[in-house]
Image (cartoon, rainbow, N blue to C red; front, side, top):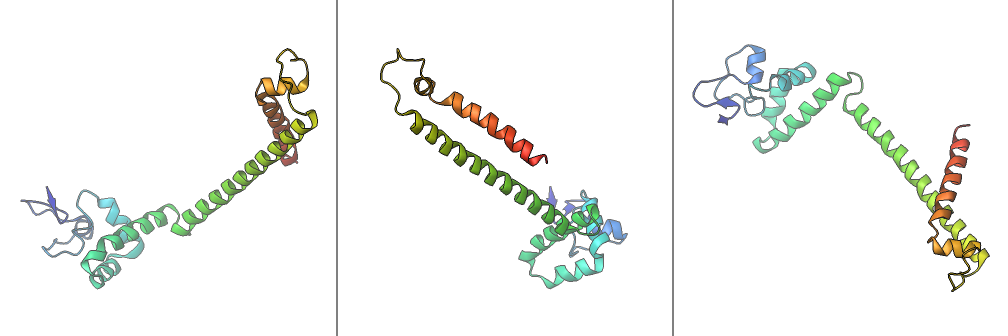
Length: 170
């Protein structure tokens, strides 16, 4: 079992002390947050923030907030390693662009649904109510009602989509 980033029994240095090549003291501020089996975690934090700065930040915080602070530093350090210029901001910006694009797609789809519903309502009102007898299946309105309007919806969707694609491809 682990306790404070070390194995019980044999004193194993935490990832921070191992990387810094120093003896890991019982009261090491890094040990609870940078266990020996996760060396890359501290390596990235050290590369971005420096061991001295991390040590100062952790010592200035109350113990109950240190875990969250380390988690934030690890996230930022990993983001900086992946994107040295923008770090977390680059990831956030990319996600925001994805949200904007998806919101635009959603708005277009909702507008298309409204358009199709209006068109379908207009088609139904132009043809009048469907006849009660199923024997008159040759008229357009009886075909509409007999097939529960699905073919018209599919046909309009295909036509509208193909028009929309040609408009957007310009």
